Length: 128
Image (tube, rainbow, N blue to C red; front, side):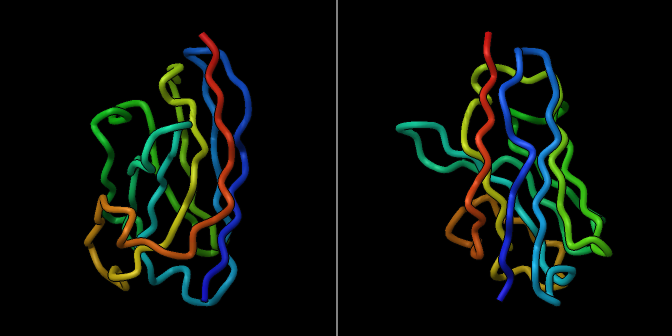
């Protein structure tokens, strides 16, 4: 079982940057594809970015492509989300999760139902 803890959220002005971190406990972290999701008030949880077990492939939602960068350091059991050029519509609680069906795989699904071990989330607020 992998437990995940997100951090790095906060309040930032539009155009600013934040870097989120997701630290995992458990020996199998490095075997999983990982995903970042977000959920704004009154909206469904949506996929933001994903990365394969070795960092060899990444995938982004169209809404963040070119502005966000996902990366990982398996030696530190950590996955990151660098967020630049932030917009007010990026305001949400951001979650990380492991892909349940992506063990040592280059598959990165976009559906939340394929992920598990969700962290508690970190709030990102972008003011205009």
